[in-house]
Length: 84
Image 1 (cartoon, rainbow, N blue to C red):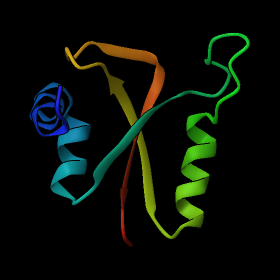
Image 2 (cartoon, rainbow, N blue to C red):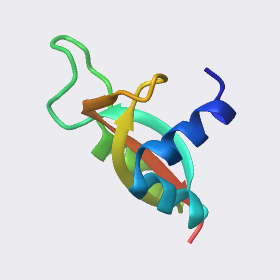
Image 3 (cartoon, helix red, strand yellow):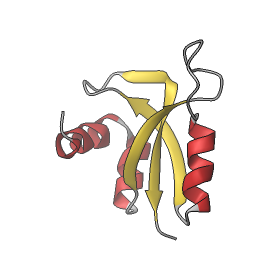
Image 4 (cartoon, rainbow, N blue to C red):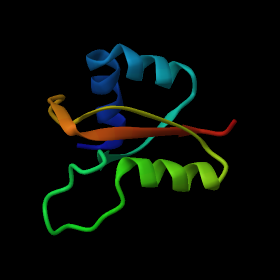
């Protein structure tokens, strides 16, 4: 699914995400919540990714994550950014 198709689905699915979009935030990625990555996989979690984005000068918000079908991904967070 293309990002352009995904955003209306997220807006419809989640009031917090609709608010973020209205405030000018842009979706960056879904990332595993701390301690939720599958065993044996070493990747940055959502807190580490958010810290990296903040160090690059972005305002960052973590919200609920959904897959392309709009189903919740409780082990993940979606990261959103905008310039302060």
